[in-house]
Amino acid sequence: MVAYSGNDPVNVVDIAETFASKGLLVKYGAGGILMTASVTDTPIAYTMAESSRDADQALEAAGTGTVSVVSLDGICYLKAGAATAAPKFGMSVYVSQTASDNGTVTVNDATNSAVFVGYYFGGEGAIASGDFIPVSC
Image 1 (cartoon, rainbow, N blue to C red):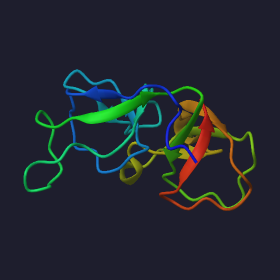
Image 2: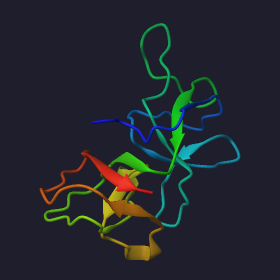
Image 3: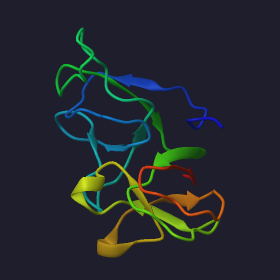
């Protein structure tokens, strides 16, 4: 299984926060890219890996670190913020809506006017929080 859509990743030097995982949705922010944090945020890409690390192997912070991202198109493997018991192929996927799920997606839940990201392109097995799911963007 490929971990990204096949587009060339871009190394972003303007990060406004630390990214602790791959597969997180990111949006534009004046101080650099950020994880999506609201259902109304418009994602522009997703992370290919966590943020860069310093000499002590700690994740680098905003203003000092970098992160590799890929644009949202094709089939992307994005991180699920919430569990979905019985997903169906083709269900809509939205920006997650809770603060603890920043940067993630939720299947079939447009609560609070969540922004549409794409369609679920996986099987019908349960999705656990933190799983990487295939999304057609």
